[in-house]
Image (cartoon, rainbow, N blue to C red; front, side, top):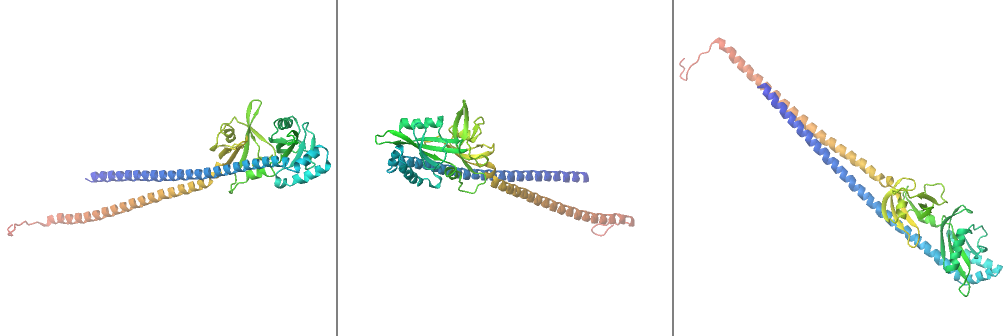
Length: 376
């Protein structure tokens, strides 16, 4: 009988223990799944917010580049045709030194705020006929000669895209505008030489929100001996040599700039020129060979999210511990009650045993049995 009761008790305990383990496993699963879903939701929200910000910044910078280009072309067109500049220019071609100083004074008015490094006039042979500042221009070579020839042939403004000037040891961009006589014949070329680091690049690299790793870069395609390359024309934040054009191969398909020159536009995750994973937005600047990339390190994007993940994990662990502690307390409390009941029953049993024992011991003293009428 005792063995049967003990076996039944052990069986109930095993069943209770199994139920507690199953319940705790369910709690852990629900809490963990809930924490994971919250984390996923926060990650998506962080991505969406950053996508929106990057897209807006890229569009803003693209519009700024487009506007900058329009303004420079407009100025090149205007200041080569407006009177008295056109008169001064034609007089300079004739050797008039008074016209030379007057044109210098006139053109200096538009060389404020770093718009132009120098403005000069050359003929078809590359001979310098005029320049605002008496500094070496360092432009005329076979490549530049081809641009000059194009201006003479077409009679239109031509842009010489970003290039590294070996004379000034920095990147230049030049706008070549035709200087025409009364018969609309090109007599010379006025060159508006731009130092991008003075105004354009600071404008592009300026970030509207405080971000440590954020950067905007301008890239373009380049083919060298049949090898496709990406050229970074803007000064790069994480390179010491900022006044050079940095080139990389497009062998890595995960390179954001490689995606850009292949025609991809919009939000993308990939690697930048450092090999660091970034979140980026790509936009091609209209009517240019330029691709604008606004990017930020994914580590920075998810930095705040990592803090939230730690908080979510901590809360989940505390919740699991709280539930576990509550169940353990309830289980121990129940065990104490059961133990108390057993002790009470044992005490009652002992009392009963003592009474029964006393009755049995009384048998030796004699027992007289009578019926209801007192008859033996």
